[in-house]
Image 1 (cartoon, rainbow, N blue to C red):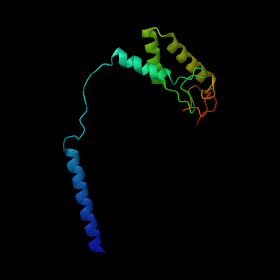
Image 2 (image 1 turned 30 degrees about the vertical axis):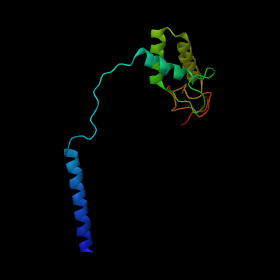
Image 3 (image 1 turned 45 degrees about the vertical axis):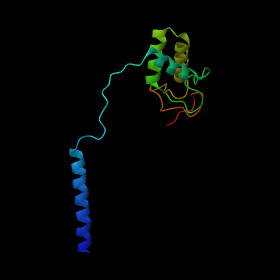
Image 4 (image 1 turned 90 degrees about the vertical axis):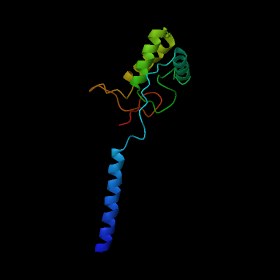
Length: 126
């Protein structure tokens, strides 16, 4: 039993040394530091793709579950204002109104549930 313990200990130490050596080497994946701006065409194409999945009755995107996506709505608000796209602005307003009046908003304590399990923002996921 002592021999097995020593054998396992040697394997463990060898593995720990490999891990330590790996931490001291250069990173395998180097971050890409490229500050490339998106072109107007790239942004317009992306927004057009987003428009194709808008739920124009209930806000958000088509189907369920529905997730509050503040970064997306912030982007769309900025895009709508800068491009004077009233359809985008109306979609964001609809989405925010449906979220606020639906079941995922905590009307007593404030804040939103993680997401709605149904397509009309009524049934929150706890």
